[in-house]
Image (cartoon, rainbow, N blue to C red):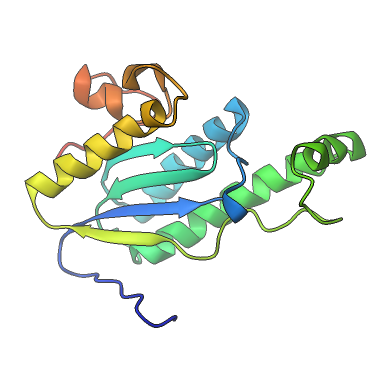
Length: 177
């Protein structure tokens, strides 16, 4: 593990986790990619039994606010989630030469073969108070607006905003804490 990177598990805290696509390329830009990510997040959540308190899926990164899982650690959860999403999305992106050519036009820095899908590491912040929980949720939900992807948080369906604002289930039901 690199120096300075410490993970604190077993304290009963929530974890604010951020991870990015390889070189922050927008591999999650397509609606289909974001929907597939949400579907896999839901599956991993069921398998590892963790509370999902908040999320937002952006074109090149993801923020999650989750509890420690009953099975494994947040690191295990991220490993499985990233692996499943990358396998499924890489498979569809490399199916045909035409599709690969389009990807190369969009991302000329890519080499002959498709690179890894995710950056290797992730950021993990222990959320230890209600104030910090609210801060992280607000940050996540404002992210699509800040990035000028939408004008209002409720217009971005790949987040937990509607669960908090209107009590609607959204794409993934949220575990209120």
